Length: 141
Image (cartoon, rainbow, N blue to C red; front, side, top):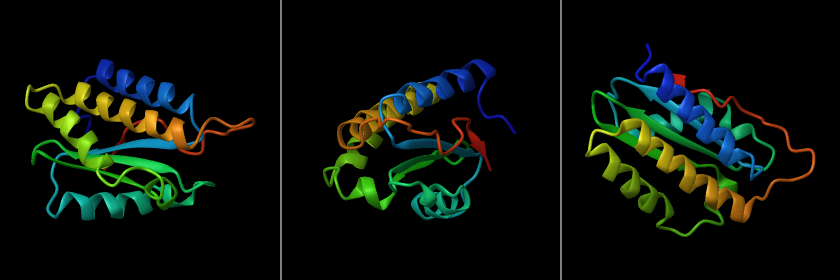
């Protein structure tokens, strides 16, 4: 059920790898065609299903997108939500939305990954012996 070209998938995966190379945080992309409910509720459900709430420092970020319904959400685990500014996720969503409006779906997601990665790096710098706790591939639901 690929929603992206192989090249876009590779670019998104590389963006996740690059962001995570500077932080102990984890970033995941979750995509599906349709979202029959509020995207934030859907993201919360997938956050748990993908076991993102089980990272050591509780510093995972999930970018969820439903391509046909034009819905998306960004959520962070409790560890990161304690330290980022209150409007951080809205700022990130607006930057992504600017790309989405131009039909640049993959670029919008990559922008979100970079912005999340910068915040994760600031508050959760890479630690010696850091382990990649979650897959960097897009999770198709």
